[in-house]
Image (cartoon, rainbow, N blue to C red; front, side, top):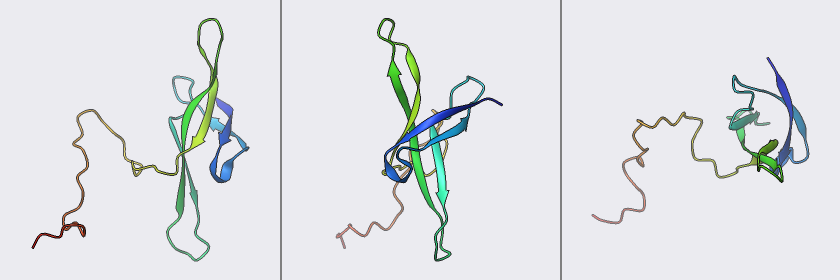
Length: 100
């Protein structure tokens, strides 16, 4: 498998360059998740980074490479999103509901 040295931007990994495995298309994955163990033995914290273009060529506007940008507000929860999937609904028993 081929890997590509990819820089990370923002968050705890800011400035790091890691080798990331490329997929069948030759591109790194769209999201990169890094589990960080909790020192107290609780559930690990997951850092989420999203793939963004590193730059574009002047003449044709082609992508020059990729980098990962920190996404602290990730709401996907690690699930795959398929076009035929139903949207997520909030759990029943909303605490903001003041009716009744």
